[in-house]
Length: 251
Length: 64
Length: 222
Image 1 (cartoon, rainbow over the protein chains, first blue to last red):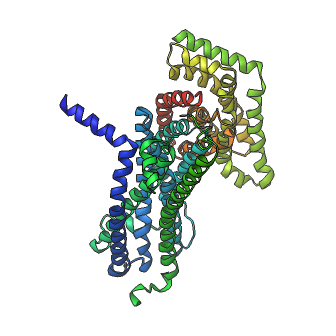
Image 2: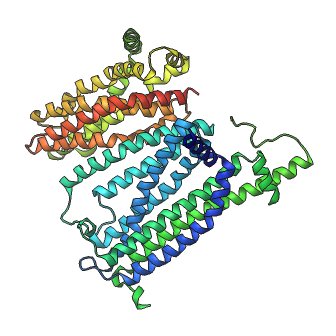
Image 3: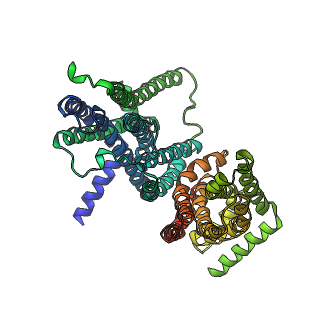
């Protein structure tokens, strides 16, 4: 019983706006600082340290931004769907705010994945766009993000909007593996002769390390940007409450 | 800066990294601007409220 | 519980047969848009034959989307939807009655007219049975997935535009498997695998979407 009581206390504490505001505020500079350091190291090791690729020459270096962006686009959608589920089941305002603020960040990462994938495609396949499995799935993911943002903006009451979007996000998350699988099946029948280097099972350590460093940097960046947006929205919604007026009075 | 010269791929690599930078910048600037706007709005509202009407027009049409 | 289901089912069919336009309009849309393609391309038998499955499927998709508005709109506006949530039977169960009726009204006519349109597009007769089969498996799935979308948007002013944005990405796997099946048959192979996938998607939609639709309706009725 004691364990449950302390977990329940922790859970209630964490979900309370002033607590989240304070803690996220404390963590934010460290998150962004570490993120900047990792980006710096990732860029250095990716652009300068990593050797030239045997097949693709220098152009492969685009993967150090393209792949993390693509990973993040999926990861952010998962976060959005999970917080949506939490918001739907427990009606937590904080979960609703976190969920909806994932959408623009995730959409921008998806756009980045598509754009860098397209830019990579030009020297590789001599075309700005290829209907390959990954790019097509990413495009559909972008549409899913747009749907979430459009639906949220179309409903006036923010709490109703959050509930509707949570349902949509959950339906979307169930569909993402289906979309990926179907697009891959579709693509293997139409695939051209080229296979991207990244499909090969082994990747040299000197290329793997910058990739992972950039991936972590992107993740930290996502958390930092998310915190910034959520904090502002919390202030906006709770501006009449005691904790907010005390905080704002000091400004 | 020879290490940063990628030959014929220069444009593509710098375009990709440039786009990345722009997307990251956007994700920092938009929240910052929103926060500044909010603080400005609250200050203005406090000023208006203390000098005139008692009506809180910001939250009038919202359902809790 | 089952009597309520049957009553709801019969009611929806009755309403639709009284308002024939609900049945006719999507059908006419389907026929007309499919006819646009030969008009736009010219009487190029080879090309038309090649794109026939894609044209018919995409148009069926769009026609289904157009017909979705009939599913909940009138019940939403006159309050019957709210009454349904108050019944003892679970809303997710009752919804299947409405969707079944809706499919009979809008999906089935499309399937029945398809062989005629396939002939108009020079589709080889051996492949038409597969086409009908893909539509038979696919249109109920489209109705079920679309119902989620229309449940989310029925209370909105510009719901129609947002509906397409929400629903089209979710439709794409169905489209992909259907057209893959038809391409296989075109090349002389068996389409069993793709048809099995379509059946799987249908079963998945049948089991999961009623809950999503019910949840979405409760949000919209707020």
